[in-house]
Image (cartoon, rainbow, N blue to C red):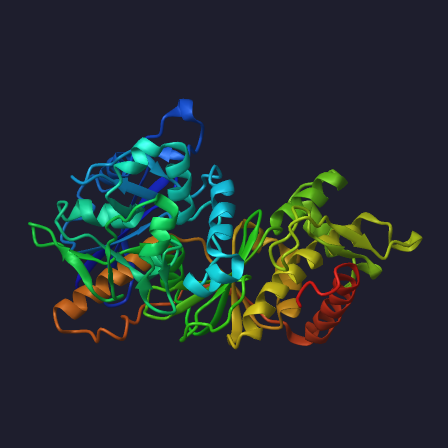
Length: 481
């Protein structure tokens, strides 16, 4: 038995887990908040990366890392750290929640010839969060700082580099690189021309490591694995494998699935990321998930728990009510100017429980549309992991399996990104010691999860889907081509 650690530097906290290398059992845990400037708001867009190191040190206090042999690093995605020629930060890191680059992202889309051109080049269309868009924003709004940029790292790259003592070699992994907007998961290579298109000149990019490779060893002999982004680490920590999809219920939604090959001709609805195991992680985003439930709850003057209870008093199909939940426009399908639509109103259907049911069914059918995009490109989905606070709502658990047409797993709360980082560390350590195959990750226990089966409701769920699709296609003909 050996001991490894995984640290996850999220936008607000550093979480560390110390795990058994053979089983993945969590032996110790630590966490600490990032020391943020309160005058900049609860989650500022510009962050001094040193704050990540400070919270890391606090989270690891009290001998937490004693006898640890290797560390893996997971961190918030899309946080761009621009470095000068000496390796110092040119300015604070531009974090993933930064929306200032929306216009810059649109400029880049036009600059390369449209959304399809970007999808073909790097498997994704630039959005405000992506590093490539942040570079364009930097070049346009802070040209002096942009002119001094000589190297680019993301949050987990920078933390790995710091833990190793800032060596000449800088590294990243496939997962993190695939979210930059200037590295393609399909070709496995950078597109330096896109860096130049955004920044106005070239910059040094980190070496992309394989999933079981080590970034290096500290002077004390501690192995540091490649690291990865939070999304990839969480999937690895959950034990997601080929045939699994993960549906995340935030204000907006996302659906991702593990796939063995890059998707060809994905169009513009799929973001083609790489995972933490050497495979691929295609993702489809929706703009409306829990915000649909919250809006309905506010309209009815209830909380989400009460909304769930109301929905379960109704029947499948919501007595004919269908809600297209495009409250913020929509990304899947691509309807940026759309509004929500409620149809099927009759005197007998105008009851709170039917509207509540329509909200849950509309949200889940919208996510089922996203699942359908992946399935339509040959991605196998045999079961679905459901994440987010709303996953615990009884109405979600009752409706989702039938609408998705698969068993739904609701994992127990856990630091899955940190666990995924620890699993990566165990893999790199095992390869380094000659105990593990560099192509096969260590077999750790899967996440403990509640399993919700579609059972006899499968046919009913498909009827709900058909009712929803009929309204969608009538209101927005050709939305899915």
